[in-house]
Length: 140
Image 1 (cartoon, rainbow, N blue to C red):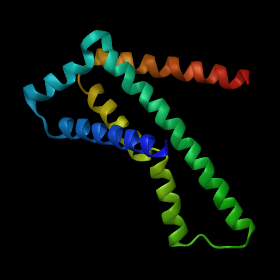
Image 2: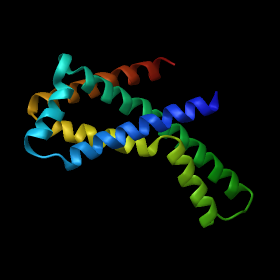
Image 3: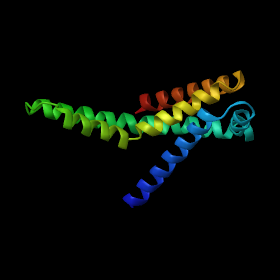
């Protein structure tokens, strides 16, 4: 089960990396064709990339909370946070999806440079999801 999840996670990370590379190295007509893919089907892919942002943002937040808890335990035990432990924390953050979140946010930035309509769409989508999340977190 864990191996299948890791493979799926690695696949997503590779795909996101490829998309970022395509944006980074494409110019002119090639970049316009790539950007047009995100506008197809009534911004369906823009919806998905924004959803991925929130999914990975939540995962990274959980990883950061675990790291902070671990740091607290280390300090309570009068231990130091040395380079090895800091490396462990960085690894925990990466395992929590930090790299994927960076790729997702880069893709969102590339998309927003395309045209104002997409930027407005993404802004409203983020606002809607933020308000939805905020209202549900206050209800609990």
